[in-house]
Length: 320
Image 1: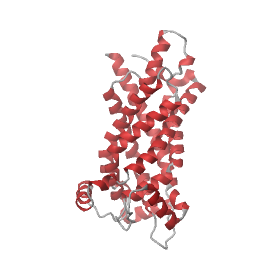
Image 2 (image 1 turned 180 degrees about the vertical axis):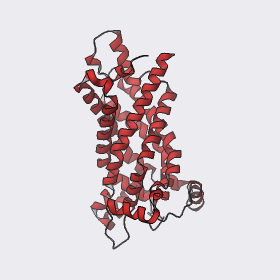
Image 3 (image 1 turned 135 degrees about the vertical axis):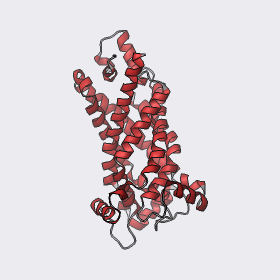
Image 4 (image 1 turned 90 degrees about the vertical axis):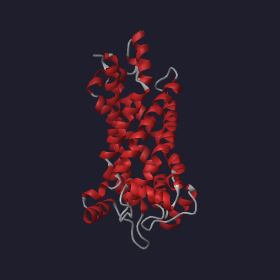
């Protein structure tokens, strides 16, 4: 069985020769087929979002805001409110919509990332600009797949949601608002996720490389720790800097439902202006705690699962 751990070593730490050259190529694209990147990304996305879904529900509830003349609710208050009124299952409303969207979206996300990284990196697999640009390309493609189901998911997550389930929500939104309602937040989502993904991927690759170089002789024994730590750092940092745009996205996707404001346009600046007038600038940071609590472990789970799947396929290919 081939030693899949070798591909995580930095080329400068290896002896020169054909093996090092082969390793450089493996670091770029790991010798996997296109469909294997898609399967690895799909599994990673489903595991990540399912594990962290309750935190995502709390974030959505907080970002929608409180009724006028009511103070904003904190994370603990929202959690107690959901458990008291709806029970534990209330934290999982919309899980089916997430499952339908996350798998295909992450398959697109990671396959586009890997192909872009291979194309843009050239002879330098450690190029942070190539990682950041690849992340942007990946998110533009995946958001087009995920945004409609994300809209359905967030509407189902609302307190006293009027929808009975995924199919009922899709049918009613199509009938009452038209297909454009599913993509009302797409521009904002891309504007948010482009910098999020650029920061995320660049931080992840840099952190993974740094952690590997600290103790290269133990890399094969600490792969899970390296991927999880690098992923958590990348997720937390990227989540923190993009919270205001995530608030805008949530407001657009849930507008007109359960008393949420309806906006005259899907312009990001229009929504930001409305939030600032209503809640002040702190309103743009609403839900930042559950957002970071979601993305740090979610990224750790996602990257660990993704890299584990890649290692599985790498070894499988070498058996053939």
